[in-house]
Structure formats: C-alpha cells, structure tokens
Length: 216
Image (cartoon, rainbow, N blue to C red; front, side):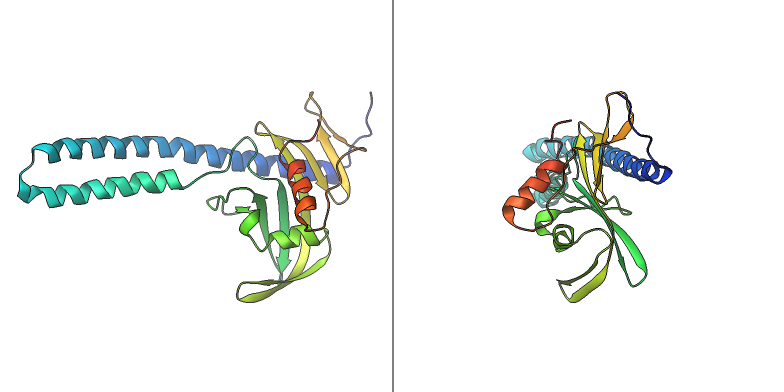
C-alpha cells in the first residue's frame, strides 16, 4: 500500500517529537541508573552503622544514631521520588507563548522536573492542564493560575502515543500521524481526534489515547 509523501513541515514536526521523546526517556533512565548505586551505598553504610552501634559504648551512640538517621533520610528521599514510566512517560506536548516568551511543557501521570527544557508535569495537579483541555492550537488563552492571570497563545498542542518507549502516534493541528512497523511515518486518515472538553469522561478518553492504549 502506498502513502502520500509527507511535507517538509510534517517531517520536521515528527522529527521534533521523536527527538523530544528520546531525550526525555534517556534522562529518566539515567536517573534510574544513577539512583541504584546511591541507594546501595546508603544501605550498606546503614548496615555498617547498625553493626557498630551494637558493640559501641554508650557515649558513642548519639553520634552513631545521628549518622544512621542521615542514611535513612537519604534512602527515604530516593524511594519517595517516583519517576515516570520510561515506557510511556507522557501523553501531551504543549508549547505556550506569554509576553513574547515560549515554554514547552509535557503532561503525564508523574512529574519529572529534571528535564528542564520540557518538564513533565502531573496533569492531575497542574493548572496548565486546563489550557490543554480547553484550547486548540493557535488559540489565545486566559486562565487563573496561583497568584496571577495567565494570558498567551497555544503555539503547539500535540497528543502522542508512546508504547514501550517508542513514539507511535502524533496528533497535531487537526492531523494524525502514525509510525509503521517499517519505521516510516504516514498520515493516519482514520486516526484519533482528542476531545477538547475538560470533563472527567472526555479527559480519560484523551489520556487513553496518549498512553499507548489505542490500536496501532
């Protein structure tokens, strides 16, 4: 089956989203990789301190307990910092322009702020989610955020499907694109059309589209 060739602008859009997806997933995996030896080291240090405390003199115990509490705190911080699943870390990409400045935001189920250029924000707790659900690409928005009224333009509003760490679908500007098994990208004439309304039902449908739960 032959497919119409994509325009240079469409290819650039797809390349941008693939690069963004790949960079974010690498960043998440790097944090996973870096965290393990830190956890192992803190756990080993805590075990050594426990053994030392079991035979220590009473005068030495306060200092040992203080060190043990420090290691427990390190372990607790690492465990509490949940990371997005790299197999499907986000479902939407927003680019907003306010007062001549642009910023990119990714919406997902868990925040990941270390990816500074395009941080992942937990959509359930982010006021910016209202812009995603209530405005189309190219529209001006005005929303009340904590401490200010945000007014700007939705430069990009894209819904993506990422499955097993691979970007498979993109919906942008009223058009849908999907990746074939061969790796080629084509227009998806029967692709998904995310809802813009912010009700719970429509929000869930939009989220399912972006979490790799659609047919490919």
